[in-house]
Image 1 (spheres, helix red, strand yellow):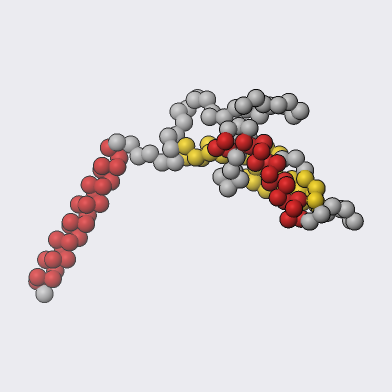
Image 2: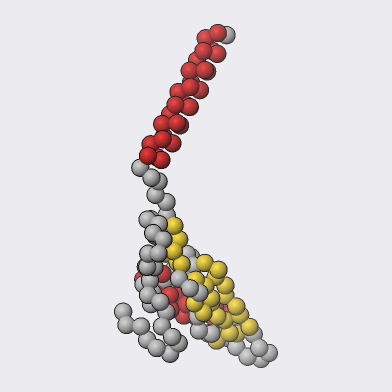
Length: 131
């Protein structure tokens, strides 16, 4: 019995030391974590189609194209924040959908306070952005 207790105690001490060393090593150099950086919300163009699926697909394609103007990394619906697709189906008409959301990117290095954001601000409606 004494041998098992001694072994268990040494094992627990070894695990504790290993965890402590790992925590100390991680905090000494400053841990890096990916952060999500988001642009202001974009409203995609309303897209009309015969089916809801087609209207949703068109609305999403419109949003992705607009978000891509900020930079290719922003053209990801999966990373967008506060995203939604709104659809309406007037009686006897086609289904209309619009995608909305804040395009985001993942940044491995957090931004310094006051640093410029890594995207170009959206141009006013009706104007084109040169890429």
